[in-house]
Image 1 (tube, rainbow, N blue to C red):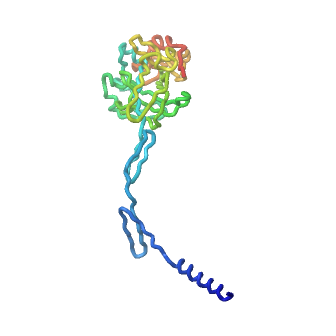
Image 2: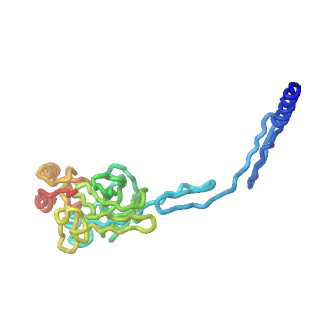
Image 3: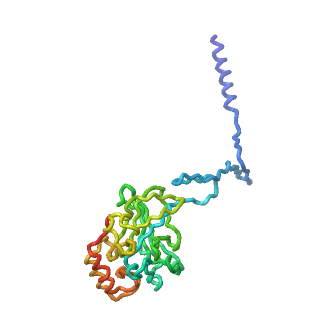
Length: 291
């Protein structure tokens, strides 16, 4: 018995040594591949199964495979607003586009993103003529003081707000959800939708902030009734603090007689005149943003 134990140990050792000396070659099954080599280096590679399907649930997009372009689903929005100033100038239901026709509109936005457009955008005339730049924001559905996304855009003579190409609907890189929609202008009181608006990536959602006082947050305090079925954004906020005050009037008085693209030009006819003060500012003193 004393002799058997060493023998069993030796046999077991040989057995496991034999196992450890075995080798298994690495193998792969691929749709394509090859071996490249030179005198000193050898490179083996394979290509896995190609999957090129794009999957989306409307909010998230998954790209599979190779050589695909970046795909971003964007919310589509078509707001409508009217500005009191150029409506007073035109005297109709179509806003005056004197800033455009006189070559005074800048190709760079006056707002935070400083977007630029091509000059040919201002060649459009008629109802789709560009009146001015505006600033459009998506606000949190639970707290409208929280701005989630914003961008510069154009307002046309018929009230449509479009992208900086002068024709397209607005697009936001935000998830499909409900938002408050707000519109700011450089010398008019900002307006916001009275309720949240559901936005999606498939069709442009139209939100008309000019059709009735019920469509805007704050009701009749937020807009001015133009007497022709249009409720317009209120002109006169020269210093853009959300309130029309004597300080706005005093600042505009100092600029009487100048011309060009200037916030003191309340009726947006390209001139700072007494009519900007007497016809607009003085009648709107005390009005302010409602959100």
